[in-house]
Amino acid sequence: MPKVTVDIFAQNVARALGDRLVALLLYGSAARAAPVPARSDVNTLLVCDGVDEDLFARLEPPVRAWTRAGHPAPLILTEREWRDAADAFPIEYQDMRDAHRLLAGRDPWPGITVQPEHVRRQLEHELMGKLVHLRQAYATLRGEPQRLGGVIVGSAGGFFTMLRAALRLGGKTPPVAPDALVREAAGAMGFAPEGLAALVAHASGGRALKLGPGDPLPAAYLGAVARTAEYVNRMERTRS
Image 1 (cartoon, rainbow, N blue to C red):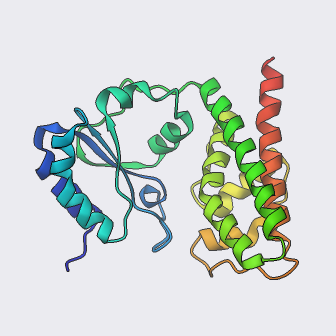
Image 2 (cartoon, one colour; image 1 turned 90 degrees about the vertical axis):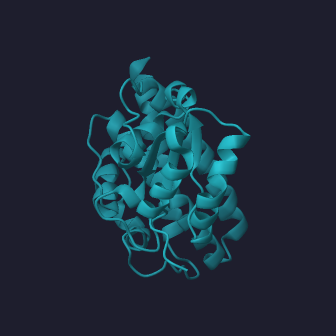
Image 3 (cartoon, one colour; image 1 turned 180 degrees about the horizontal axis):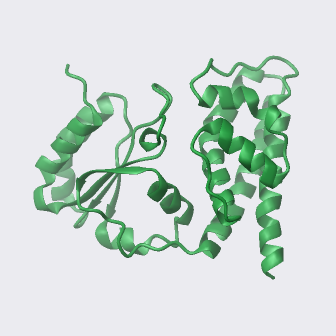
């Protein structure tokens, strides 16, 4: 079976949808300057003229081949939903705007604006949700470091997205590389970047994260999430 690259996927989707396609975007780590092979999900967003049974019938062959190649199916929004959802998903819109590539269709960004207050509200909610769930996992899996490591790895991508959003709120430009991102965020938010070194190495394409008994990474990671939540909360108090 020939390899299904993102460009082949884009060609197949464009051919299948014709004028129903508004835009197909590659976004996230795979669209950044230095994606990590085998660890960067190839995330795509499809904006189309509407969502109905005809659309799904046309998409079925290209999406089946794409997902069988190990990639997630595209997120799908109508053009109206895309224009109306910036206040519902401001963090995702900001992050996507910073790291995306137009694969097919036309540029969907003109007219899209993200309000800082919407970002702050979502960020506060997401950080506190992540913090309480991580504490729950730590309480459950503290004696099972390998499983706990899997939880941390699974949540790290979302946390890095939140670090970028928090830095933007603070008027800074977030670095692309994970090590530079964590250093910059640590300085602004008040946690020790050294404690996340093993996680950063994993995210940068180094050896797989393996925790042993008493490994300090989980506590350091929890502390970094808590400090980031406090940083965002202080922004709200400053504005009050």
